[in-house]
Length: 367
Ligand code: PLP
Image (cartoon, rainbow, N blue to C red; front, side, top):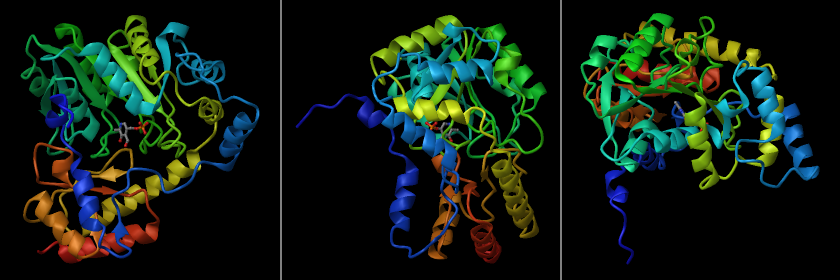
């Protein structure tokens, strides 16, 4: 029997898995739990990947990423940055792991939003760093004074996700400026998770990397924007010394993002997904309007494809178990939070499925 590292016990298995186990017995559930687009990769981008494989683009690329994707990024969304300020990563998960690795020693603290994307907390535990949660309840706004009250001399970094999973919050320029001031005053690095940047429904989102470039490593990618969740391509952009530290760790871990998928991602940089975003905006309105009509307490999401209403009775967990008994698959809030008061709906689904889910939720509202 192997003697495991301590991180095996300190890292918690995802609570989402437990829900999927419970849901395994459901036949044809109304599934509003899936955190990926309900459309497939656009055909021209699939063609690019297939052509790249056939053309023999199957070997390692340079650690920092292949020339095609780097050139498109530097000419497009990352315009103005230098060559050494950009790293192609194995999707945003890879970027998160490398940024934590470059910034956090055991015992260091990282400020995380609560609610949070599951990986933010578990990566901290994996690195033996301490997560400090800044609460964003009840309306998912960033409160700089609340965040500042948590900062100790061991705090090294703050993570900002916008648009956010699981709340769909898109933070305003003023909120992000408040965080930028804190980062400068307390010498914190900012990890900005921009994976849902495309899905911003009420105008272009403010971006941490524009407001505080000297402190921010921004992480973006193609998993959600172009439905490439299985292709594992993303990027990290930030100060040269931090990106070079992450590049060093990539060399000894991921090596590079998948080569042919980098070629397809290069084509994705300028591939217009505006129609999908418009459709998802309408889905956002459908789910939010339906929940409000049914009497749920909820905040209108500005982006991503999630909404995080308050459970109308019981804990988030108890309410979700009742949803499961009624054939509706959603995720309890305590998978994403230190609290158990809310639940997450992922509305990346057909309108018909969203309507079925709303009908069930309307019935369950009274308990
Ligand atoms: N960040 C957030 C907020 C996410 O929701 C996800 C995936 O669900 C990721 C990062 C990981 O994305 P990727 O597939 O690019 O690794």
